[in-house]
Image: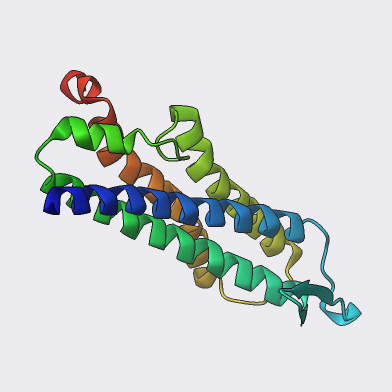
Length: 179
């Protein structure tokens, strides 16, 4: 009975990590797209959209900050879920069952290309957007803050490393023995 509950929790955890990864990817795409035009703070540019029937208004600079924070937060949550997946998988003694559960089709488990693009593409898009915004000189913040921003932009790489360290060896135990 407890083993079935742990199995269900493992399935849900890997799917939740996948949702967080998709959220990171979508926020990174919008971040990169929003950073392309040269925002002029004096021009009074405002973004207007409706979310669930609520009208929202924000400057492009505020939208970039929010999207960046959503990206970093979702990457950290995905990484936390992968730690939880590892802990749950260690509690299941039948490693074939763990392998079967982890073979559930998600961005993180489908293929090496899917894992790479699902985790590293968002990081690359965020770094691209940060470089574009940094070179435009829109935000007058110290260089140290930019380096922290670039560092946190690599949160997707942290998720990729976590998948490479745990999910891949459990999905493909023959690679674990060869490596």
